[in-house]
Length: 265
Image 1 (cartoon, rainbow, N blue to C red):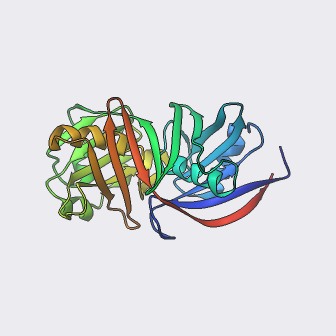
Image 2: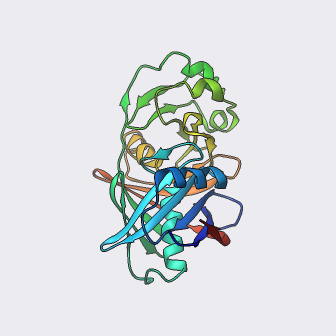
């Protein structure tokens, strides 16, 4: 492995520094050991650190929280594509292609920022596991189970914003995380959400691209349309555009680089 490795920190799903969701992006020349990547992610201590290295047909991309590797991450993919264009590793007109544990994912530049092409992750109605309502502190209108997460529809945006979950209880659930959502009370947005994943080492993720792969199909069914503007109502907050196209979800957002440096191996 090279002695120094380019390392960036990018705020994703925002056009302003210190908002949205911070992701670290580590540019490797070749594959690295998972144990080393996990230690770097723990050192960076943001919700996800992305590690990518070039392939003949694109880039290999892996994502790690401070405690574990994950199968799908939107904001760190958006951050990775942003870095590739910003550092001229990709031409402005070229799409970014990433080989991941969720298959090939792509990103392209659009007039409003960056658009990610991700797999849809719909839910099916499910019985709430024991302790879920108590851990969230409210009774949900709807409980769904997706590939990665539970999704809870709540009775209003104020309820979503005011939640103070019991993270220790949530960490016991056999899923990556819990999405809570409701219709928006702000006419600029169709729905709001928050995302909690203490079992994956992230109590609350500020803006979660992959959760919108579940939220898109959910709200498509309820609102009767396929395009949305969403707000993730964490303390940092972030705006995500969502378009459902069959079994794919197109996620749009902006990104801002806030740190540039090198990592000693």
